Length: 216
Image 1 (cartoon, rainbow, N blue to C red):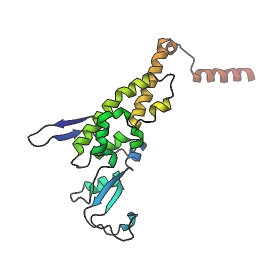
Image 2 (image 1 turned 135 degrees about the horizontal axis):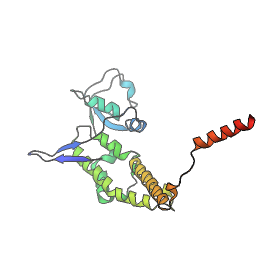
Image 3 (image 1 turned 60 degrees about the horizontal axis):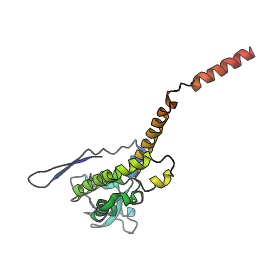
Image 4 (image 1 turned 180 degrees about the vertical axis):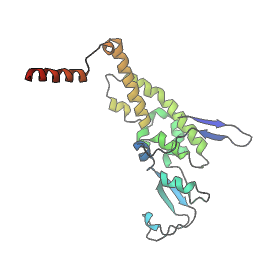
């Protein structure tokens, strides 16, 4: 996850290497279902039934509603924007300030299991605070990364659930991969990884051959 800002004569412009939505990735599909606070900029006829707080046939202008990210995105990319979008609470300035103060004490999984990934997707919206959000996400990830790595490398005799329960899903994957690499390295040190063993396919072939010879 990386973001870059480029200074200009006016305001800083945000660039990011965001990935497009991946409809063949189950994790990405789940993230795209996350809700985004929206306000309708015009009346939408015949879709009043999608508003749980209304019994009208149409969605009236200025109606506020939470929509799935994938739907909010499609309604924002048109030349005439049908909805305007606000960031969910955990991505607003007050929460970013908490992360900036000490990201390591935050239960990020409670804020959102896919906090970083969904935060990246929010940057696709044309929002005044997109630069602040990008910087906040990057700073939080960088601040927490060392602790994730340290805890994963020293977790051999500890309860991994307690070490990972407050982590975002990306951080959990990093923890798991690091732990696996440490285990592989320790196995290599004691020589276990260099020991040759007969593959299961060869063993099964020998068993079948022995059985056939015995029967014949």
